[in-house]
Length: 427
Image 1 (tube, one colour):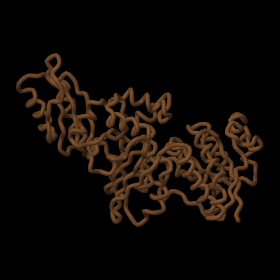
Image 2: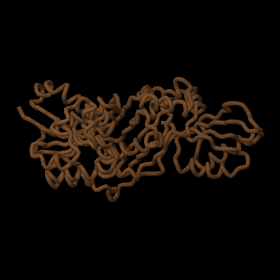
Image 3: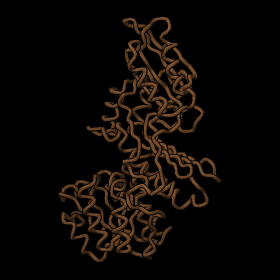
Image 4: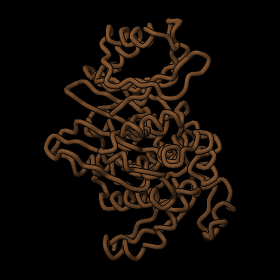
């Protein structure tokens, strides 16, 4: 029986869930994996934070060096969140030759290349399954199960907060503000929800997942990002009438050296599996050149799902011993020479305007769109006139982002247009 001593840095929600799983399922792991994993130290700012969870005070420490200098501790779990001091703490741990398991998607997205270089230098392991999609084993699927395939596409609902909000808006007709308030009351959304609702959380995760899927570094700064704060109940209602469900999608595609990497609200056809992923659940849809379509589904956040992924990494790390794996590409935090992340991607679009209610206006708008390569699939008035302006929506055929942007720039200068209320891409 191999004995493994670990430390946990940060005993908040995820750290607490990790400790609970290691304690509750200790005998299961001993029986099935031959590993006796015990927590020797828990680092937190206050001992009271540790004891408040019913954990013996003897495990608590407030000094990182107590972990770094302990020769029995071989694996350190980071559940502090944020970039600093987590980055500095992990670098110190890796420099001491101890392996690290983390759930920190922002840190891995922004500094993963630096952490991996430090791990390689001492032969330590760096594991981050829990950084993306909670308890869903997406990273291990990409790295250990899809080796026979070129992955050409990754589509994901990878933020539970926004999926909960959009589900409530769709199912119950709530406004964005009301749905957000309910998500905050239930603990799905933070008091300051910006990272979730503006798409930053999904952007960090897509950076990690697309880099692994396409075997090349995709910096988070190269990803197009758009949140859900401008989505209205009217947009969702129109989409439902047309057979679509609105989701915040993370989209990655690769064709040769051209890559798409974008996060934005998207109308998903109800026939697509992702359309039925509701509430705070997450799902990732993969396409491989030989395996074709795969979808992974489950809880994308929370103490137990995320803790489950962390414990899985602890087990793998303990079994690997000195044979840790690293990225199979040049992970330097920059785009590889010759790789292009496209800004002019192709999509279908939903456009919502308030147009002057006069003869010829609709023809003028469709003419501008057509002149710039945007073909209309459906056009309809949705709602009543107000102050001489009519709400009109368009669904386009497949076109390009540049064509739509150029059209809208021209249309915005027309005195027949009061406002462009919505631009939503359609899968």
